[in-house]
Length: 211
Image (cartoon, rainbow, N blue to C red; front, side, top):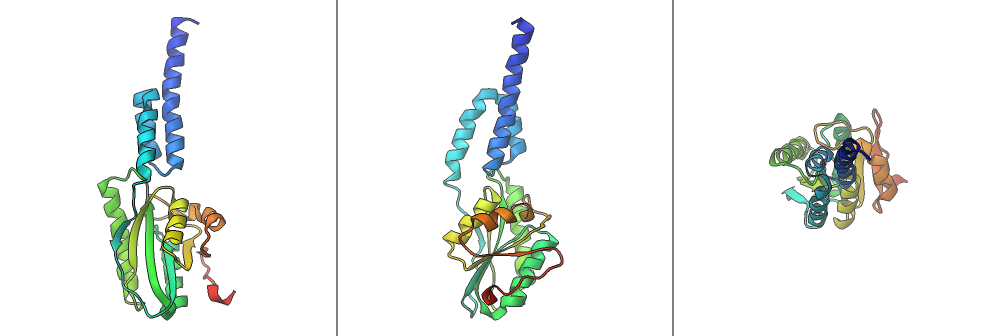
C-alpha cells in the first residue's frame, strides 16, 4: 500500500467514526448532527465521549414544568405534544370525549439528550401554550413535562412509570418541536403496555371505554 493509499484509508476510517457515531447516538435519542461533527473531529476518540454520554442517559430525569391539578374524574391520560395541528386535535379530542372523566391530564413533549437551553425553552413554551389553551375547557390544570431520549421509548416509559390509563398521540405530527410524534406513533402502539389512542388527520378518536 502506498503512502497516499494509507493516508486515504486513515481519513476514511476517521470520517466513518463520525458517521457511525451519528447513526448510533441518533437512535439512542441524541442529536445526530452534533455527533457527526464530533466524530469527524475526534475520529476513534469519539467512542470515549459516546460511552460517557450513554452512562449519563440513565441519570436524565423528566423535566416537570407544570405540576398540574387533579380533576373530578378517575381517568389519567398522557398526551404527546409536538406543536402540530395533529397533536392539537389529539388534545382537543381527549378533552371533548373524556372531559369530566379526567382526573389527571399530562402533556409531554420530547427533545434529545443533547438539547441546549434554547431548545428546552422552546419545548417549555410549547407546552405552556397548549396548557393555557386547554385550561379553561377542563376541570383540572394539565401537568406538563419535557422528556429526553428516543421519542417512542420516552413516551412509553413515562406512560408506564406515571401509571397512566391511556396514551394519546397523533399519527401525522409535523410541528414546532424537534421530534414529530407522527413518525413514532406506530412504535408506541407496538411497544406500550398502556392502551394507546391515536388520531389521524381529519379523524376523531372513538371512546376508549366503549371498546
